[in-house]
Amino acid sequence: MSEKIKVNTQVNEKMGMKRKNAIAAVFKNLLLLILSVIWLIPILWLIVTAFSTNKGINIAHFFPEHWTMANFKQVLFEPDSVVQYGRWFWNTLVIAIFTCIISTVFVLMTSYAFSCMRFKGRQALMSFSMILNMFPGVLSMIAIYFIMKALNLTNSHIGMIIVYSAGSGLGYLIVKGFMDTIPASLREAAKLEGANELMIFTRVILPLCKPIIVYQVICSFLVPWGDFVFAKLMLNAGISQNWTVAIGLYNMLGKNLINKYFSVFCAGGIIISIPISILFVLMQKYYVEGVTSGSTKG
Image (cartoon, rainbow, N blue to C red; front, side, top):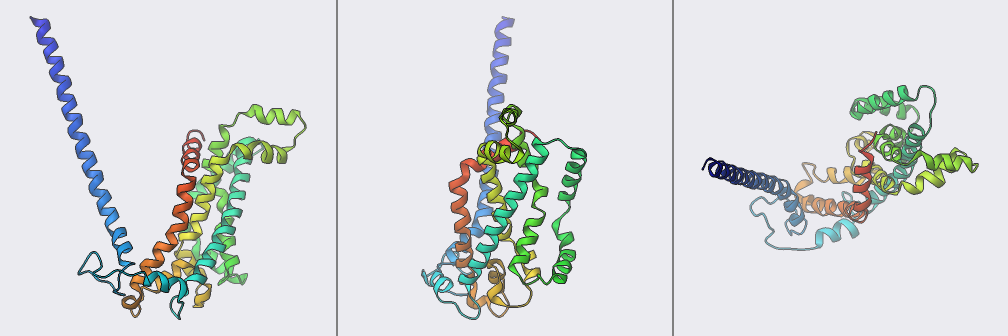
């Protein structure tokens, strides 16, 4: 009799735990749903506003009363004194591409040196680099600006590329973690065959680092693509042809312009998000693999 009571008690406890787990799962999913809706509503509003015939901010209706593609046509094919989107897009693209290439090369070389080479002061240099990378970049912006001004590189896309790329090597940690997972026996075998460090780096390590290279390329591309603060600080001469998309879109939200260009601003925001969204979707497999592999060992 006592055994039956124990069995029934255990069954009841298991059923109670299942109910608690089910209730907890429902609450978690409900909370995630609410947070997702809160996060998505402003984005959805900007998207639908881009198709509105009303040029200003219309808070009376969530969805436009009349739909049009005129805002996209204006932002792409009808430049004026305020909107020069094609030029801004080209400036942003050039800066992002060169920054991406230079930064990726710097990070890969730094990661290889810390992961695969042994030299005096290596550990101290790694620790110093990590600490230095933790400082917010905003704190150094004013100093960087005056240095670039002294070199006559403000209001210059070259100056922006230099600054975006110069400190990229400090972000080596995830790429180094990925390289740490590559067996040292491969490098040793290459050395026995007479390969030097450059040959090992380019012919042995890099071909095995495709996932983390994709991760680094996307991260390096995103930095100048969406940056506003540093671009606004550097490109301060008021020459609209030199602006990036972020500065140009921000200018549309001026007090005297927002009622005429807000829908155009929304259209421009959608267009600038398309290339990076496509890039991320195409490279998502490698991106996730690179992040997970690079974070397992440091």
